[in-house]
Image (cartoon, rainbow, N blue to C red):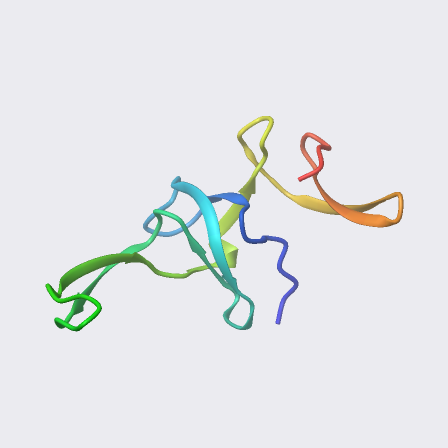
Amino acid sequence: MIKLKIKSGDTVRVIAGDHKGSEGKVLRVLREKNKAVVEGVNMVSKHTKPSAKNPQGGIVKKEAPIHISNIALVDLKSKETTKTGVRKEGDKNVRFSKKSNQVL
């Protein structure tokens, strides 16, 4: 398993694949599969049967996981993709953007 530098709530941009250029917020990170679910990206259609929870049934759109290697963190200041680093501030470790040197 690789070390993941992307966390839930981060804003990311897709850098490879069918959805290249799309941006969204990370909803979930699946560590064991090295994938992340990004809001509004990689939407798939799922056909559902009528049930008590969904009496109508039909086609439901939902986000599918996308591999971590295909997404990059977006810097809040410059709105460009950036790498992250970790530094110690006081007694806490904090993540920071290597482009703007700003704490994430």
